[in-house]
Image (cartoon, rainbow, N blue to C red; front, top):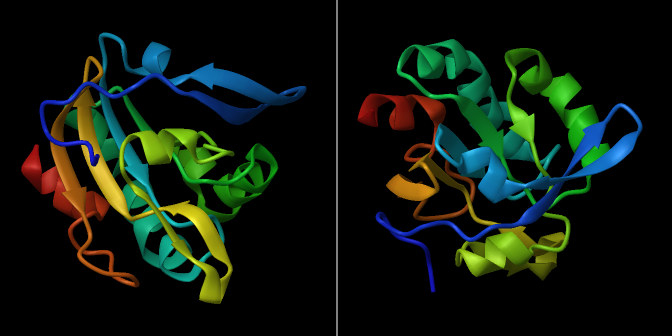
Length: 162
């Protein structure tokens, strides 16, 4: 069942790249008592994700902070090694965007945002979404209506809703 506005997000053990390698991160710990932008996308280094979706949050990171957002978190179904490289490549790391890998797609499946497109090699990936989460509860939620589109879920669209 797909998550909706008013739902509390389930906890998830996600992975980030730390100074000594991959580190586990509790999503519930990142969300507790905080105002967080969370977004998901099909994958690091894929077309629309690299040219539109991530850049829209990099461009707007400062504007989100000015609106009281404590952190921006991207949760793709990728490993932390790939995410570390992608964070450097896209400027996400420099912008302070947290890249937390849902390596087994369990969180993405739990919130009903998983899809597969085997014809292009994408198995168990995240649909394109963005949300505002306040103290673990979804207060704004956007999903795209089709593949290859990044309009409703772009940073600018979510920022306009705050």
